[in-house]
Image 1 (tube, rainbow, N blue to C red):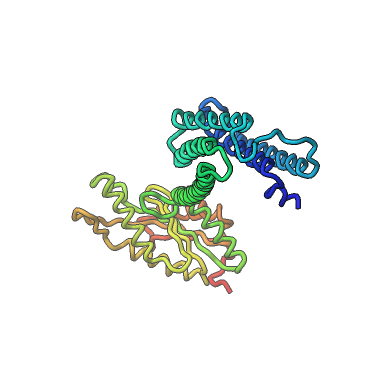
Image 2: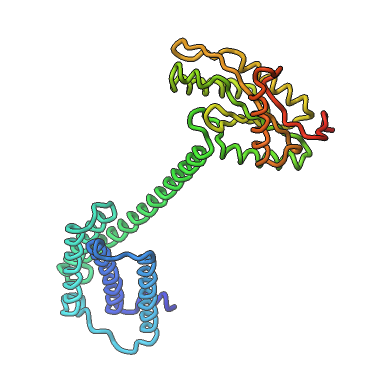
Length: 370
């Protein structure tokens, strides 16, 4: 019943005062927006600036509604007359309308002079102008059921509807921009993560990528009671190629080597580049030591074939390989260190060796893993 009395108040005068209250709040809202835009460079916006304003606005709106409900229930005093018969031209009504008209013109001027050229500011300018025209038509109509009254109400309805639609559209656009920016940020983060774990020359995992992979591989091997091998590959005679043909050809050789060996990988095996002419090959799901020998034979055969590079350059290089086997050579961090020791043993015996790879053997290492 209270809500019905507020929406459909008992007499025309009270209804007009309710309308005036709403109209004043609307006018003040437009003016506050215009003033905030004009003072944007002077106001020091705190992190919760807009939220605090929104909370205060909500409190004020609820307070006004509560006062309206209390007045409708108890009517402690009569409202000043705002209408004589059907005539609006009372000094109270003209004063209220005059103040609102000046405030709207002021808001329109602030928006034109200081506000940034956004869609919302443009429509706020239109609304300020429309409300000023609405007030003018209302005063000029001067009477109930006049053409000016109905035109002003239609104008008011259109203005309020347009500002709601524009603010809703603006909110949707902001949310869309936030989602697009978030997607761009995620893509950029993924790209940075890949760059941090990838060698820029060959596209292979770098030392950081190798460490991450080895940690997962060792954990998998521990759970499945399996064996993995880490092989460090060092290209022999790479420096003479650099000295003779230049660094661009040396870079092409490194890329060609990485592509050739990568084609030999099976399943979860991985090739990484430590830097310079050193690479690391990780072998997984090995049944016994003979599987390591088979894999190293594949790499040896691949290296023995000359590399045909651009500009009709053909080079032949050798390789030295050191191999460490988990779990006998230690954990993931120790595997690379132990394989490096085996690599130096292979390089020191380069002229007398029968194969290009050396296995770091540990006492008690079986030939098969059951």
